[in-house]
Length: 247
Image (cartoon, rainbow, N blue to C red; front, side, top):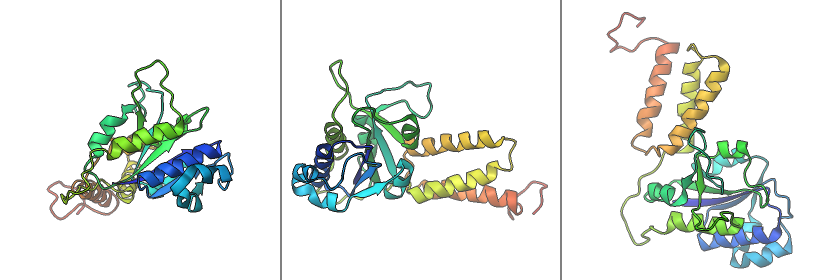
């Protein structure tokens, strides 16, 4: 597994430096900031980064969380809000549970921390594949963003056996998800669903694909199935079809 840290609307250079230091501690692939409200070249950030200064030198600055999808296969948002099961996109899952499911994966996983004062917006939460919370025993569940990040990074790596040579299974890559969703969208255009319903359905399937943690053995079957159905609708029935449709 490779890790990416993503900070949205970060306000203080000190917190940015602390995240850079964590990236170095956990050998992260990238440090990404979305619309930072502090100067990413601030000397205080470099002071706090310690040996992680290279992450500040190579920091990736983006405008929207959606743009970060090209850098990670799975995006996990951290929030103190647990949410409710009635919201299909966002019942929060304990970070330990997600870590257990991803323990043998070699996917690129992005950890998203929100603004120091407001956290993640609803749209940003929906963009994430998972919403994770960190179980806290007190009645104050809110952690500093760097503290939340270190807990998440630790949980995701704590069961890693660095001396093991066992082959990890790969999770469905971002490109494979996009192929699946592309064919599904094209298929749904021929259905009885109205355009707004199609958009909502695609969001549901995107979330389901991420939560189900589809492996590299399963993803070709899913994408291939969608491709075959799309070809049947837009071209003709396959040579092995036993129905009376056009062949």
